[in-house]
Amino acid sequence: TQLLEQSPQFLSIQEGENLTVYCNSSSVFSSLQWYRQEPGEGPVLLVTVVTGGEVKKLKRLTFQFGDARKDSSLHITAAQPGDTGLYLCAGRGASGSRLTFGEGTQLTVNP
Amino acid sequence: DTGVSQDPRHKITKRGQNVTFRCDPISEHNRLYWYRQTLGQGPEFLTYFQNEAQLEKSRLLSDRFSAERPKGSFSTLEIQRTEQGDSAMYLCASSSRGTGYNEQFFGPGTRLTVL
Image 1 (tube, each protein chain N blue to C red):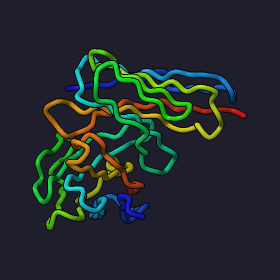
Image 2 (cartoon, chains in turn yellow, orange):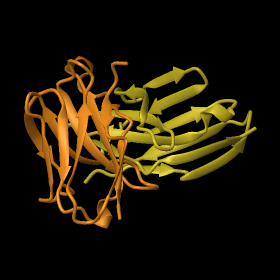
Image 3 (cartoon, each protein chain N blue to C red):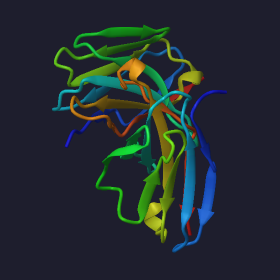
């Protein structure tokens, strides 16, 4: 069974601070996705990383896929209140189609 | 809007009743997935279809659960004899071969409450 562990589980910071969320596994994934979810809504896809060592930037968000494709990180620069939400990482195994999700990181950015 | 849609958005039912949810995927996405999410957890995979064929089912999908995608377009998820433990958000997602099926796009979910 593939498992993804996210840390931290909760994060409360002030506007303008930087933060990093981690997603770790002992399993290799063929691709890894990051989603953001608002209360009562479905997850919204932010990025997909496929290649080991890959780095993708989306405005103030930087995503990195580990060289061994077992872990990933999400770094947010100068966080804003609009970044508040549940951030989920999800990995797709090589032999299947299902996504395995982490438990999520609940981010609160205070003005 | 051409995203994934789900109906209803909310469902309250009494224990023992049957419920059915519908999902309409993004047009031309031939894979459709069902997930379940409980409070404070990430979504958990239930099942997926490629066109009309159901290719994989999780052990979470007990015999009270059944999913169909009869024409390879919309899908339905039925829960028979609901239990309080079935209370959760039921999410549908779809993907296409164009992205190597790596990118799954989710609908808004159906929130089920079993009293």
